[in-house]
Length: 220
Image 1 (cartoon, rainbow, N blue to C red):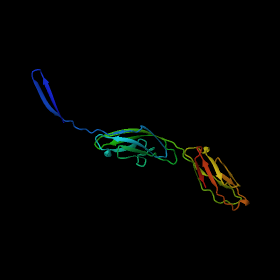
Image 2 (tube, rainbow, N blue to C red):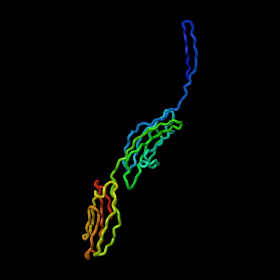
Image 3 (tube, helix red, strand yellow):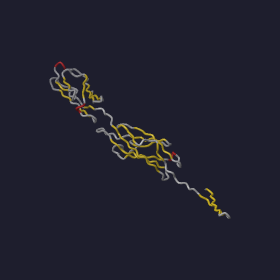
């Protein structure tokens, strides 16, 4: 409260009047600062980004922060994929893109941070998040026959998948290849016909698939 006196003087007489002025408080909104507007994260990983919240009227521990994604197929609006942490000035945004075993999860989404002071004061910060690719290793599977009769043809074709590379880009190697068998390094096919001299031999065969970046998987 301020006491204010106003006077007017005509050169002969002076007249004064006094009144009181009360400044009523209003709620100042909180703020979000110290975070880049453009964020980058690698698929199949979880990352965190720090930011700062402030409010001249509200204790920091009372400030509530939420985060939402505009592209829930890329970053779902679930706690395990998107949430904030902390109760002081420095908070953390934690992001984990969705994972699809059959496809790459790439793209962009807007992440909106909202801080609420509990008294109708809010602040919003919109971030641009880009999810970049990482090379996923190939996978090889299948159940090869553990026995084969002498004189009968043997054929095994492994099941192979790679969400990042075409099958023509994959290469195959083999360890402990039987002398009677042929091996195709382009397809991983093992074939042949064992003879009398091969009866009773137990060979631990290992077939490995390798992608252009050197990522591997093996089948024993």
